[in-house]
Amino acid sequence: MSLDVPSLPAPRPLRVDSRVAKLRRIAVIPALNEEDSIAGVIAEVHAADPGFEVIVIDDGSTDRTAERALAAGAHVVRLPFNLGIGGAVQTGLMYARDHGFDVAVQVDADAQHDPAEIARLLTPIVEDRADLVVGSRFLNGRRYKPPFFRRVGIKLFAGLVSLIVRQQLTDTTSGFRAMNRRGILLFADDYPHDYPEVEANVLVFKHRLRLVEVPVCMRNRANGASSINVRMSAYYMIKVSLALFVGLFRRPPAPVEER
Amino acid sequence: MTPTPLRVTIAASVAAILLLAVIFELIRTRRLQERYALLWLLTGVVALVLAVWRQGLGKLSDVLGVSYPPSMLFLATGVFVVVLLLHYSTVISRLSDQNRILAQRLALLEGRVHEDRGARDPD
Image (cartoon, rainbow over all chains, first blue to last red; front, side, top):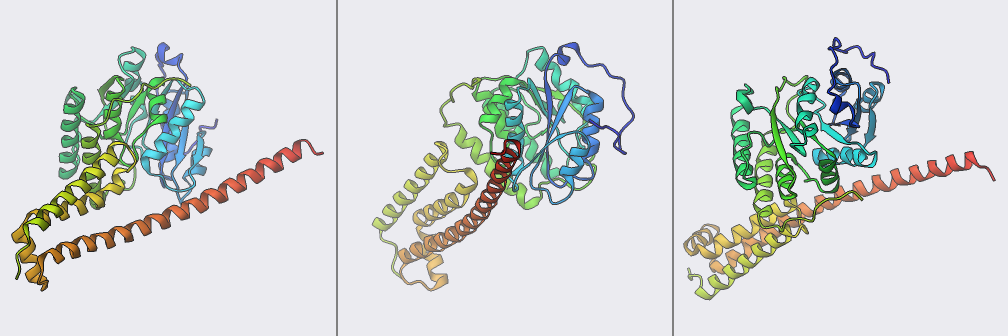
């Protein structure tokens, strides 16, 4: 694995928790046209914890995302056409399931998540307090200020999901999350289609898995804007609300098991 | 202008409610994805509103010069059906494109697997 990427940040002192070190761990990075940031993100994951393998799911990029990811030492899966974030992440989790990984961490390819915080996401898992850990941008007064309408949407879904799962949640749209083997098995089997994060939280609750939020910081996007524009966010709001509402009337699913 | 007969209002409302109930049940049992249900839900809601709101239906008929309001109901749902069909034509086009890409990638992959096997044990 070569780490001599030009944008490699200065190596941090490494202190991998001994409980974490025992686990086979993988970072799942869905990427669509992120050739400028992908190598840096992979290098940062390896710098934060060299025991991590990285799988990049190239969701139909037209640039050199896949080549850059391979050169940076990641496993790369190229989807034959764009499946959207849900299908891409699920592909990564199927990889994690099939290759026997114990924990998977989902990281964005645009460098807005700081891989140095992965350790914080893993703590509730190694302490066996959670099956899914979500990095919250709002917990403990983290000062993340998205634009007004996005903030309203995030708050609305946080409130709705908190009601449904009967647990106070602050950030249900965050894509910075970690899961143990049970979480991997569940999501590899059943993951919502487009804009999956909000519904995934409810799915975890319905399967009686444990969800814990930990505070994380968001960095400014390395380049480009959010993948969600105004027209899409209207669709996002309606689609997710509908899914949450109909979900209330679904029977509890059968528990997931190792097959 | 003839007012809408009450029987038409009742029958149309029942039909719209049935449609909405079927859509809901299809989503719930996961036979219809949310993204493909949205247009159907809109159609059902518009049909229900026009069926129940008799004055509204009458006004809309006046504006469009439709002399018999129940025909307006028919026209409105007809427009939505056309939009739905068009939407599904674009969906089918995308799916057939993706299907072609899948078939091509699978065929190329199989070809490569066979070639590799042939190279390893030539007989």
